[in-house]
Length: 448
Ligand code: TRP
Image (cartoon, rainbow, N blue to C red; front, side, top):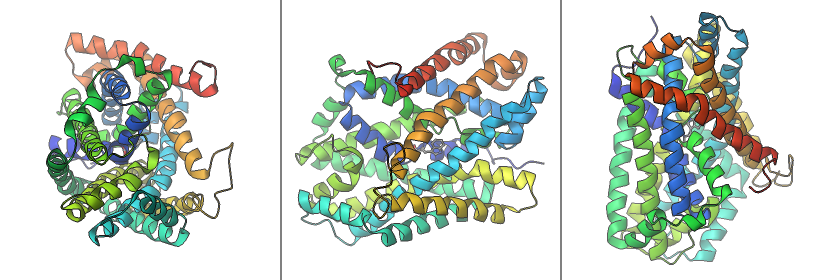
């Protein structure tokens, strides 16, 4: 018998743990900052509600029906529908995407660990803008330090994965997710006390339609895949551990709600601190590493709250990283004689190796460019803008055009009205939206 989560809550926590990650606390705020605030937030919310939620349901549905890892799962579903075995490709691409994403995700998570220690040691006290910049660039310029933290983070990830679904994944999420929410709320309270909340809310929510640019629309859409962990089989494999009687729609709804709430609260918190200190919201990827230390360094209780902040981000990254390797590990266990520990070691070792190339791209290999981008940027772009939307597109097409409607319906157990809505979105809206992203990438939509 295949292992399953202990209950619905365990699934929701684990999947929310996968979704809530660097995407919410590092990427979402800096993307909001660089894309003009409220316009980006509005489009992001629309994408999450209209495309993200139905796709989340689709991916969970495929996983639970298949009861297998994403590769064999897609093969099984394809034969059940009398379709070609080529659909397995979704699973292979997902495994590859997970390995590639984690190889750069782990490097950034390593920065978070290092900054957590710096914060705890009171290292931000009285830090000026120039100093903060200097600190960040000399840190990422040192490959040994990056290697150390990348190694630590990969080790932490593999320990949890090796322990298995219930005593590893489930337990880690059960401890970390509530702590994460608690820390986030403490930080929100703190930033309400010392930050500029009203300016932050204004920046993020006061509708300003003049700032909706095509670029903002497209990056918001790509980000909605990344932040919800969609398109690579992470949600599928978590769905395959879900018991039959649980409502997929309801569970997916809670996951999407949690992910979105965390992103919004993190954004409001961070911008309140940024504005109160007269800093730049459009600082880009360095936002939390270059801007926040300055702010924390001059605020009362800065050492404590900065430490809490980086612990929060580390937890979020950790519960996401385990979901990035689980498809590969479950595939190995179900197809080879490797046990879970060895499978985890093998996958982790491979990711660790690729990660070395990624971390060198910030220093020694900074000049090596693949199609004009460093290894780090290239991996981020390739996975987020190509592999995830493509995976999501294929899953949607499979669910509505290949799978038997009766099977999908049985698994989703929706009432008629909701089923028709899911069908409409999965058939037309989501694929059209994804194709739009691709056309933009290929440069066929020059306006964008
Ligand atoms: N969603 C996570 C974040 O926001 C990252 C992540 C975990 C992910 N698993 C994934 C992204 C699978 C895409 C696919 O940080």
